[in-house]
Length: 125
Figure (tube, rainbow, N blue to C red):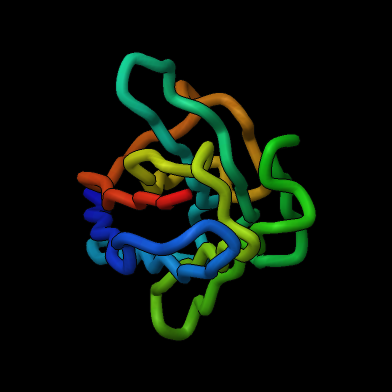
């Protein structure tokens, strides 16, 4: 059973940056593809970014492409989401997730098997 814990959320002004982290335990980290999703109040969960188990393949949602960067350190069992040029529309709870299909970069939440509890990101305009 993989356990995921997000951190790094907070309040930031529009145009600023934040880096989210997702630390995992319970399994072999490199055996999982990883993803970030977000959900704002009253809205459906939205795909943000994903990275395959080896870290060589990534995928991004259209709304964050060019501003956010996903990465992972398999030696430390940690995944990151670097968020730059933040906008008020980026305000959400951000969740990390693990997919046992390590080769993929799925944009579909139902493909992910394990989820963290989420971390709040608030961007003030």
